[in-house]
Figure 1 (cartoon, protein in one colour):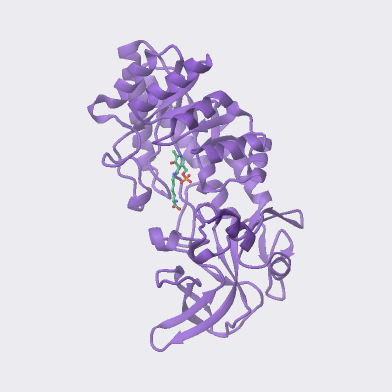
Figure 2: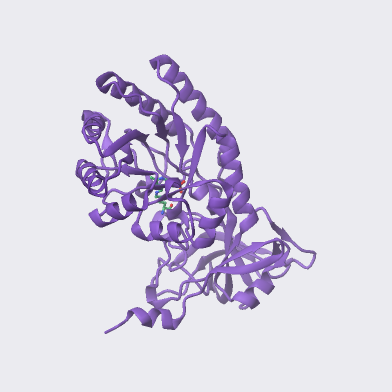
Length: 427
Ligand code: LLP
């Protein structure tokens, strides 16, 4: 996070608050989120794309009422992909017209709820869903704005589980074989639907602009074909999220300015060539906004040197608060944050307290050789897809999210308690 510094005593501070104090007050493990940094990133995306575009924060990365309020205040839109996310967004006061609804299998009940709430758009992902949204809108006597999620057929250079635009996967309607055009034809045939544009999301944690560029071209080509076949010139395109962030110093992320400029150039150029009016662009960054804004604070419990191999450092959390290393081979860094140390670096693996050997948080890292139980360590860049993917595995209690701003800290999502766990266990 931007507000992180190390004091003369070696203690790390965030927004001028010492992590040692945060640990005392809120316990560990805890996600510490820099609200000022979050807001700054919202503004950076909004400013980069300018007034002719909309930035939809992807709520799946991390969503809470406070986050929704920050987004609303900063003028962002919000992408939700479940009834739960929609409920959180509406409860915290996000205007419905600024909400976009995604998902490859929204239930009829979810669709009805979204249409009834007046969401600004539903991104349709199948022929069945087109019929369901049309039906719900007709029954409610409204005209629902929809976009078509298209599969543009590019291989994003990222982990297989988070790539979404190659042909053999579950999302979207394929450009190949004309499914996307058929979707347009069907939508245009329903009075209760208004087709506003097409949508492409190619994957996540991507550094190379090439995939986004190909995707933008193909989306504009599709607009051209829809105009030629149906006489409808669609006013919007959405180019999804997916911009990578730095988890370790080896990562080299693109900045929003660079992305905005490049995408605007390509869309402008392709539209000129096809004689199309330039559509309004929207994007859906999740990780790039919230990822870098938080770190997870852990207390070291045991330090176990394995002769000739490495030292295993066990902390008081694990795969229940960050499953990304186990699931995607994600790489993280780690630092001792509660004191200074001049000790030699030692090769460590930071692991959690769960009952399986895959419970790894940081596969390879160096920490000072005098590391001891009671020290605090921090894993940076855990704002996205960590609390969001957290579980109660081994009946772990999910950690709180503590927001810091202007030298003050407050809990925005509280730590789970044993009562919370037992409340659902009604047998
Ligand atoms: N738009 C759509 C339609 C998406 O499916 C996603 C992410 C986003 C936007 C936001 O992508 P972002 O800017 O955050 O990369 N759990 C995985 C990531 C799954 C991403 C799912 N969709 C991880 O931890 O890496």
